[in-house]
Amino acid sequence: MFGSMSMNMRLLGEYLKVIGGSGCLNSLVYARGCRQDFDSWEKLGASGWGYNDVLPYFKKSENNTNARYAATSSHHQGGPMTVSDTAPVTKLPTVVMDAVRELGYKEKDINDGEMLGFMRAQTTVSQDGRRHHTANAFLHPAENRKNLTIRANSVACKILFDGLRAVGVKYRSRFTDTEVYANKEIILCAGTIASSQLLMLSGVGPRNHLENLGISVIADLPVGKNLQDHLILVPMRISGPETLPPEWLSSVGVEAVGFIKTGTDPDPKWPDIQLHCQIGYYHRGPNENRFLNFSEMFAKPLQHDISFEERAKKSGLALMVMICRPKSVGEIRLRTTNPFDHPIIDPQYLSHPSDVRTMIEGCRFSKKMTETKAFKKYGAEAEYYNFPNCSHPFDSDGYWEYVVRHASTSVYHTVGTCKMGAVNDPTAVVDSSLRGCASLSSGVIENICLEYG
Ligand SMILES: Cc1cc2nc3c(=O)[nH]c(=O)nc-3n(C[C@H](O)[C@H](O)[C@H](O)COP(=O)(O)OP(=O)(O)OC[C@H]3O[C@@H](n4cnc5c(N)ncnc54)[C@H](O)[C@@H]3O)c2cc1C
Image (cartoon, rainbow, N blue to C red; front, side, top):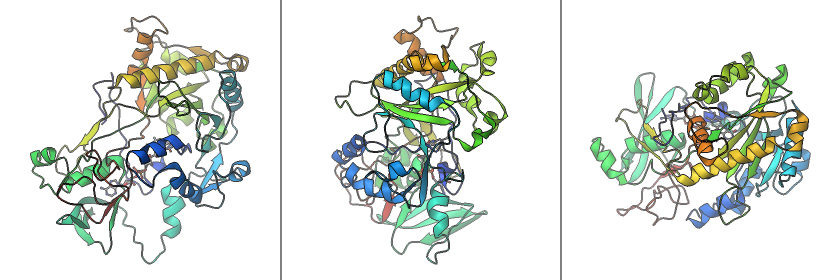
């Protein structure tokens, strides 16, 4: 369970047990990140992870079915993971492009390094309409290799160390504990939450926290700190002429996606808000409830708005506002030493005032979109939340802060708990080669690689 003192609600966290991980249920939107993201991490000590360094790997992994993109220097055809345009379901993408042009943004490929702008969403969906994720794109094609064994229904419980050297993994499968030992190295890639949990259970983490739980400390490192997540918000209801058609199940619903700049960051090209332009938020037909629990995610917190149920029956769309680079930072802690107990996830959402400011500006941009000629011509009409306990006048900062704090939810993009950084960075857990947990005064942990999460 996610919890946060800075929001007026609690959020359910996903803890997915499936080969392929969150990619088996995510929204499929293909958004790589921008040049500034990677280059800023490199400046902070992640040497070799700048935009120009990672671009060849993005390209190598990709099979972009849009020939126009594939012909550019940013994309590629023939890689294992298919990236394709969303199936054309409604007129929304065209309307969005016209609207953002009125507001000074252009239609462009957001995955060419410069993200400011809007495009018809590209998704990790194959041409026959199947989702592509790490399991079916990368793992399954390799599963017959002699040097690969996949153990399903198994939970890694502890990384085994010989001094500072990670040598093996203890896992449980069907009530039996087994230890396996590495010839070369161990790669830990259990996701942002479970990777930090497993490291702490194994003795790598903040000394005080581990000692309080009676865990012998192998390395005192800030594992679990620096938790960051993207919050997302539907800032208003927008009724419209189109709704989810029956063929919607072959679309992810996010018909267009864009990045805008609202904040005071000196780099004018570094976006701070992502917008998901989504068809069908209000239609609560059988498709929506069965396949995407939007009502649960977004509507439940709003049910004290009495008109919601009535409005929810209408067709419409949503302009979802998502913060890109939150400054609020939380942490993961162990609840117990039992690997089957969930850890404490304390995201501290909206604890930094600048995140509230940025979300408010994102909401105001959505409002402006609904006021464009393009949206009016389309027949879209915005209607704003009327929270009975909100005393602030509509469109004041106070009003929007109330909306942000009451209606935001996680979009499950947690990162940062095993931070990469320079060897002498006291906030880093891994160095830029993903191994030898950095900043150890007593030495360097050898032989363990962490996915950069
Ligand atoms: C609802 C939702 C929507 C999203 N939408 C998008 C989107 O549109 N676009 C996008 O780019 N990203 C999206 N994301 C985020 C994206 O899916 C994740 O960032 C990404 O999948 C993380 O990959 P990962 O390999 O780090 O971790 P995960 O996908 O979490 O994989 C971790 C794996 O480790 C396994 N594991 C964990 N603990 C153990 C253990 N102790 N023993 C054995 N195995 C273990 C898990 O079962 C899982 O298979 C979304 C996520 C969610 C949940």
